[in-house]
Length: 289
Image (cartoon, rainbow, N blue to C red; front, side, top):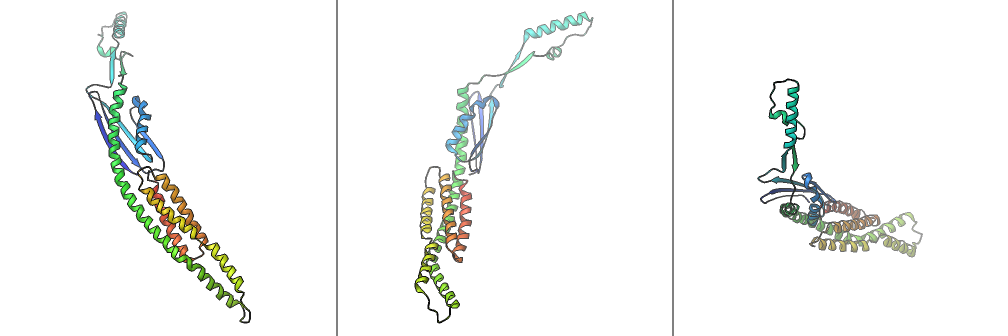
């Protein structure tokens, strides 16, 4: 599911801003953009996110600001600067030059000024980052919960329509054999002379064989059970996406079997409708954790 969350936290030294952006994805994919010198915290961040978000593509943006001071120390190598000054004075005297030595002449020399990144208090850094991360996660989960409720309502509506179609197939099913019997008798009557006696036993055997081959009672019972399970799983508090994904595959398998066995145009039309609705539900399930 999609969502956006933002969190900020700070103390006297550090200030963190965390942004989370989640989009639909079948698997759990977390991409973190953060300052390189605190990249050692990446696994901790992923672990916390996975506790809340188990499915979806999540982009994480982390900004670190240093409060009241720079993130680097500037150091001047005074002895080296003095050595450069002495060397320049000697060179000037040796070449009999009257140019005076200025500060910018010294600063152009290598390694006079050096910058070092300040050491971080790792425990303090993590406590502030985690606080801002938790805030961003709380905000994104609120959005995802709202979207999830709408998604659940839509899926339940589609599931109710699927259930009605399955019920219509169940009502139609008994008439398939009766119509087959009437059509078979009519066909035989048209082919045989009036003087030829119809073998009722062979006719009944043929009808019984057709009834057994085209029976979809088991498939209808399993479909009804799957629909019931589907509703139950949707009301669970745990992650249900993969359970529903498996269940929708089983439902699709039963519908395909009905389509291949029914040998009836009306039922075939219902099967086409069911497959379309099941595919819509399957696509939505990919977004559910």
